[in-house]
Image (cartoon, one colour):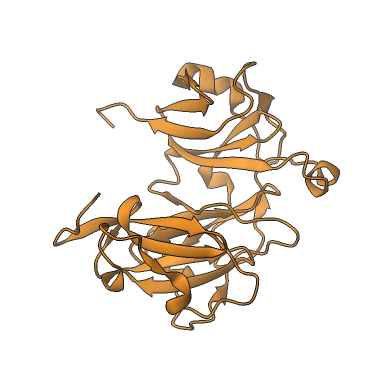
Length: 239
């Protein structure tokens, strides 16, 4: 487990049915004075002061004790940072935008509108350090991948955003295709794809084959790695 530090620690989210518990662990780096922003399936954002979170030794506290989510809500992810830090909000329909974490904060326990879902599901928010020096990687459940410049996405306080990767509406409605993974990749970094017990690392030169225009369908990943379970970003030590 991870124990709290004096100046900063990590927080994690764990889903239990439709409930979310949060604690200090390994998914989102944050400071004790900041708020954790939680996103639900209706596209609403909620704020919880991090200093009120329990330590990593327990199972965490249920979110329902701190917010008033509407009936049927479940939670897709958590993000934290300074007021000027940025994150990417996106849905599995392939749309998204960049938002300031400060624009997602709210004192209202019932939350505030953040991303327009309209028949889609929000993905786990991703923090982004540098818009100019980052790619946004999209991987669909069909096994296609597209890299676009992060600067090609708008910075909004709320809304639907722009099309990141093209997901066929008919296939999406039939649950045959969706945006499955969204990754912020620093330029010069490599991307590790985990598929079952196997993994495959795509180095920067090979990643260029997947760089394209926002809203395109992307290219198929190598055979055997089109069902991606998880991804890892590998950044050179000098970055």
